[in-house]
Length: 165
Image 1 (cartoon, helix red, strand yellow):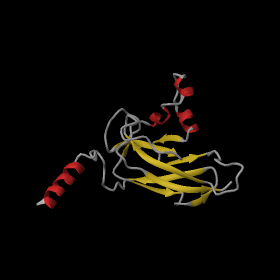
Image 2: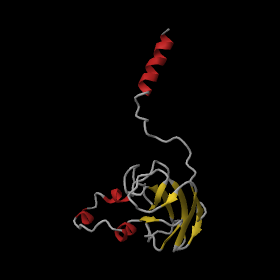
Image 3: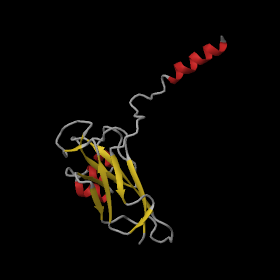
Image 4: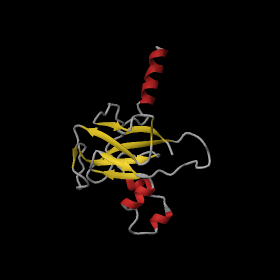
């Protein structure tokens, strides 16, 4: 009897742990094809992918789960679901002073890109340790954005590579 009551208490407590809205299904709509995972690359590097069951429409104002465009983020976590890529620089005081900021050029300087294509070439990546002779790994995350520029769900497609300078 005590064991049953204990189990009921455990399930009641776990039921309120805030797991609503999380997606536990594997999203396989995007497959990164280049560069290969943990490969050695030179700059510029082109990140390429394929996409299925997603209509590329760009930033058309729609809020569909199956249509929009792509966001790429270099060496930082992507925005939370429902947030735009501009959210990533919301605390940048220099940008907040300029009504034209953030714009596409500014975001690219921060390693934040968007495209309707299934490939994006990154021309330059700042060297995090220019004085140190160590391996230089970087990570690009591809996310799906709806037509309003908001991240769709929690899905993220990631590739890590080493830059040889």
